[in-house]
Amino acid sequence: MSAEAAFIDSLRALATSAAARGLADDAAVLEVGGATLVLTHDILAEGVHFRPDDPPGDVAWKLVAVNLSDLAAKGARPIGILLGFALGDEQWDRAFVDGLGLALRAFGLKLLGGDTVAAPRVLGLTAIGEATGPVPSRSGASAGDSLWVSGTIGDSGAGLRGLRGELPSHPALVERYRSPRPRLEAGQRLAPLVSAMMDVSDGLLIDSARMAAASAVKLEIDLSLVPLSEPLRATAGEDRGARLAAATAGDDYELLFTAPPGRSSEVLAIAEAIGLPLNRIGAAAQGSGLRLTDGGEPVPLPPCLGWEHG
Amino acid sequence: MSAEAAFIDSLRALATSAAARGLADDAAVLEVGGATLVLTHDILAEGVHFRPDDPPGDVAWKLVAVNLSDLAAKGARPIGILLGFALGDEQWDRAFVDGLGLALRAFGLKLLGGDTVAAPRVLGLTAIGEATGPVPSRSGASAGDSLWVSGTIGDSGAGLRGLRGELPSHPALVERYRSPRPRLEAGQRLAPLVSAMMDVSDGLLIDSARMAAASAVKLEIDLSLVPLSEPLRATAGEDRGARLAAATAGDDYELLFTAPPGRSSEVLAIAEAIGLPLNRIGAAAQGSGLRLTDGGEPVPLPPCLGWEHG
Image 1 (cartoon, each protein chain N blue to C red):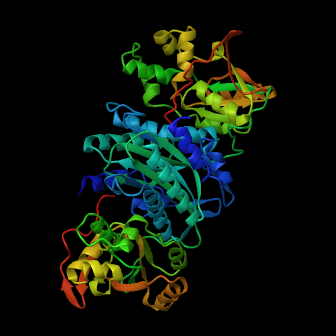
Image 2: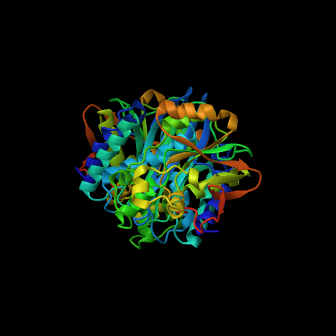
Image 3: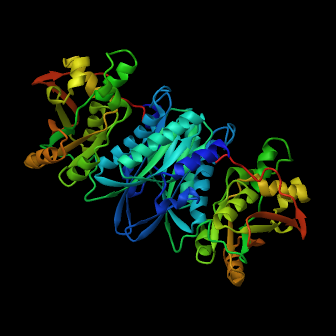
């Protein structure tokens, strides 16, 4: 067990409220008055989650987006944010505020409060949302359900590799790394249909493994069905290695969900209505863990399924 | 204007929701589903807000306490917290979790969620509370109101100076520096009586100046009325210099509030009921800013009114 996993395990003893969902979910779900609040807090640290030379406005956008992505996976409408900000140099900070304003306007959100400190650049954000219907968890998948993913997978990872000079750099991929789009509308529309839902933040395979564990099922993924974008295929190819890289890269902020096969036409109607691809990539079965195939042929799991940075 | 003040000013343009209270208050106040939620996010950074050799369990306590102190000032009952934690060495982290558990049990609170990162030790916490009645702001003081403070002032600052070897070290003062007690019960009982309330986190004088500015009144403080503890007087004395040091030291987490003179007997009845001193230290008058006296004699304001670390 990693030090982080051990630490989270020790925190679990303090998270005995039903609202905490055993710290096994993307967000806390709190019943207040007649409303269902969804609360999440994600951190971005310089050198860990963003590069020192990333444009500060994009860092602001990403900080908002990764938090809203957790709300999206709960089908929640965002209400506002609290910001924890480490003051650095004035120019960086000013560009950050500009980017924050852009993100808040884009999502129709208000800054509610927070705190600033003079300290290393570790940025925290709390996002508060209100559920618009039932709140899906990671743990509801049943054997027989179809496994779906929104959008395309691996773009952000390929964008980062482009910035590092490991792949040809493509602006659309860098854009997905720097300015991910949380799937808020998809989340709210899908929430009533799905049996389990979470966002893909650390990698399709590792997040699928987490859903499988939470739901006590086996998830079978057909690599040949994992949706890849045109720019990704142009820069990284689409052979099995490229597909495995995409499925373990993380930072996708797409939605991963399961639904009974009988609801497929409703899922596809949502995709059509909002103009976001929703693709079936596999199914849940009795058992545990992940099983990978590529067009019918079994594929061994790679040693690293994704990020474990937390 | 400091860089931090300029930065917060630029954020203010993004905080146009009534819930944000213009970022001029200790917490956001959000109406959700018939309930009034109070949300706050405060950060503690190593080397800024705590010392590298402070016991990790006390750092956890303090992180909880400084956030709950903001809820106290809103008269809110705490519901739960989200934790942003920077993983360091395992021993430190384990002791931190022990202290966190202690604090959560002491306040009857649950951990709801949060995030961990491997990054420099910058700890963020979001506390969520529910208002139990009207929610006081900083801006409601009127000319003629009495100015009150809870508990004793300057203990925490003297405790820190003891740790630094600048004063004789006294365990009760170190305890107040390391393990402050947010005045939750006092806050909930006082909220219906007060015209303005906030917690004293950065120093009695600087926080009073902030309340005066928010309320557009002058606050007159009689230094001889500022309550000092027995251990403080024993180690730091009680001459004017010692009183000014106490009133600018910060980290008190006491409640500062105004109330019409006609409510004084109710305020004193609360003090009696909960066994916490509540002392009148001055009054609000027409005008602006702070005016200091010491037993009737005018005292010039010190150049530094308190912490401006944020």
